Image (tube, rainbow, N blue to C red; front, side, top):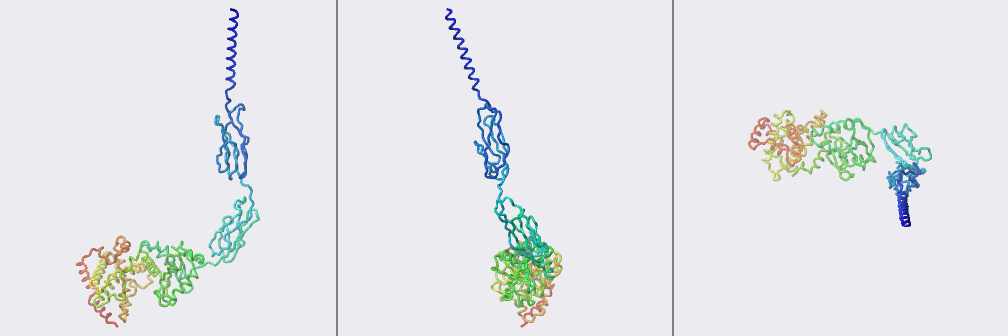
Length: 549
């Protein structure tokens, strides 16, 4: 029995010892947590393409989980291998390299500064090498350091003759002071490398007294031109124009690139033209003179008192149009002619809707039947300009309509030239005539081209040949009749008159629709105008003209 008890006691002791042993083994095998991580460097400086490996250390030292990852706040500045900690400098700047433990996400950082390796300058180049500018003008210089990645990129400009040309030492902007020559030098800061630009300053081109008067008037009318025709100023602003102002001089406006390099900027302070650049160009002047001397374009004795008003060349340059204007028949550089002739190009730009369905000066009827009514129309429209109130303007518009209604009804031509030539001629020449006369009269308060009737009445009174009479009634009359109708419609505040005339309607059609006149109205109005203007005297005058040789 005693032996059995001892065996049981031994077994119990052995079991307790084994249990204690197992318990001790579980406690010694528990992993130690990471408490922190640190780097061997908190700040480093590298040059581009240099590398450096950062070393990380975790605490406590008993911690067995040493798994961590690397990252960069800006890999474009400094990159890092995600497991090895190898840092590579990529470009100039700063970045932060971070290492983070997988156990507890503890982080340590290192600030990285990347700089460029020193690259020596080998040369500096200035552009352009030579410049020619007028007094008061400016020109921009640029400089390039070689190689492109040179460390020192600082340089300064200087002039050896500041009385001729100055230069901004940092920007390279050259300002021409006085006629002469100067050398602009660019120098690398610290010395060693330079380059030069040779500057020639020419005397400033100036307008003559006559040109100043002409362009001042031109600018004044231009600033008001849309009051007479909306959109005309925008059209003009896009066109290249050359105006011959004397036998030896001319002014180029809006030159295209073809001519800018050979043109000389004119200094001016014309009010209204502050943003308009005017130029001299000898090449264009020579061509203009050649054209004027060899072509009969509204001209009789070019450079001899008469004039070429406008000539268009389509193939002279890359520009769409090129214009030459010369002085008017009185020897004055006429502003009104400028606006008249250029308006024809504005008309052409609208698909020719201003122009004729038929144009036939030779067969246009000036006969025993038509001439009395044509003469009466001439006198009526001469007086139309004098009507200032809407009642009298309406009256004269009715007179115009009744007379053209009658002329159309007695037209003897198969081509119906009263309408197809005359009515369209009124629109084609009448609108430019209206613009030139009234813009000059109202804006400049001075009509430089005789009177609104273009001097035709004096021309008729002195006519000695039937051909001279035909010249008035087949051609000249339409300038002043069309201008008169435009004046009346404007005075009567016809809505959107420009848009109405852009259609293929004539002044006659527009006016007839506007006043809503019947045929009976027309007959009554015709009787009224005959009485007012002494129809018998008109018939007698017409018979006299027809009796001329």
